[in-house]
Length: 164
Image 1 (cartoon, rainbow, N blue to C red):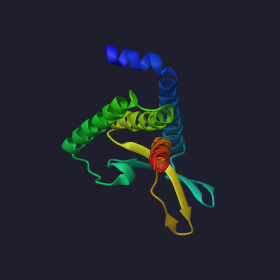
Image 2 (image 1 turned 135 degrees about the vertical axis):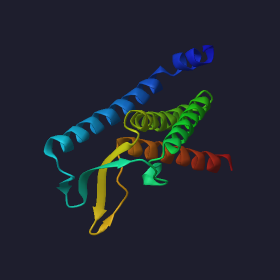
Image 3 (image 1 turned 90 degrees about the vertical axis):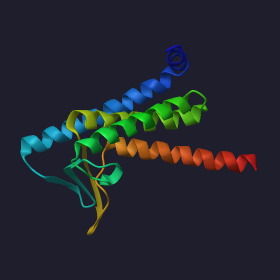
Image 4 (image 1 turned 60 degrees about the vertical axis):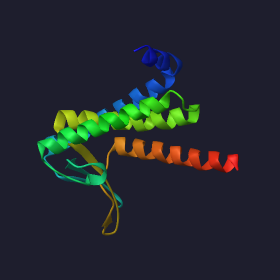
């Protein structure tokens, strides 16, 4: 517990960022779920390349390993919890830039974890497409997690370049 208090005290700004990312995800998902319930529609065409559709993802990232099995949901819940714990563990010795990146990943992961607990699935709603090619449907948490991982990869790439 002391370790957590010490990390929290030194890194309060990053924990605020985690909370902001979590809240942004919750607000957008709440709005989208209510929008589709109110209008009883399955899709909303926003731009020629962007639709909003409500898809309940019971799988992992991008709907992979989709299953309605209760054992699967329990297992995926624990895997996500372990991953979040590991990110918090890495957090204590990370640089400021790495903490920023990890904050994005943790905030997004907590948003999707919340949905797994409450809904047993994650609501995805952003459908990007070009003509007949549709990318995977995703949500704000997925965007934030992806951006955080890209920042971590770029940081690793450039820090190794500087070491050489």
